[in-house]
Length: 204
Image (cartoon, rainbow, N blue to C red; front, side, top):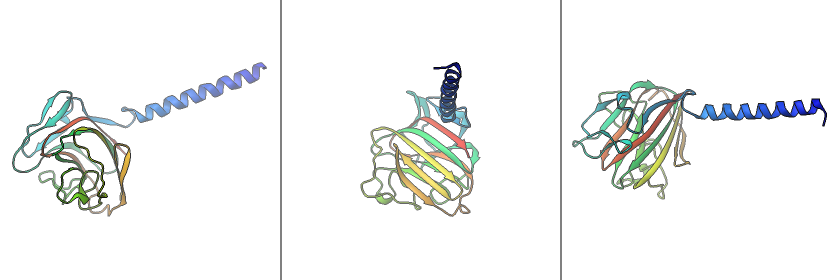
């Protein structure tokens, strides 16, 4: 093997290595990703709406009780087009969800936000865990989240909304982006126990 061939192979190997490193870096926080919750850290990135006993304990930010109405941790910043990744644990009876593009930070609900639901025991199961409430349904054999750690990935780009639960795409729709175009992100407590141990967001 001549010197020129050896040099070419070395250059190719270096390019592949650098390309791999660049790909890894693009997938890691720090490459456009902002960490909102990391274990027990991150409460300062949210303001509370409603009554719930949010605490930073046992490696997560969690709530187990509240008032008669749902309560939320609402991001200080608003987001239009974004990707969001969240790791959460929900009790079997939990009523929770990730709200996004919320229109009124004083009043958070599924009428003025999109809600990626976490609610295994929802009376109408068509909008149970994995759905976007009142927008996109899930099948009767939907994936349940109760009693385990789960991952949610949400992508909102214009009118294109995608929800992935534990690696399985549950929602992929086009929605009227003029309705809810931008707004903060909310983490809900409505019933049971909900824990958030990692939440990251990347504007697009």
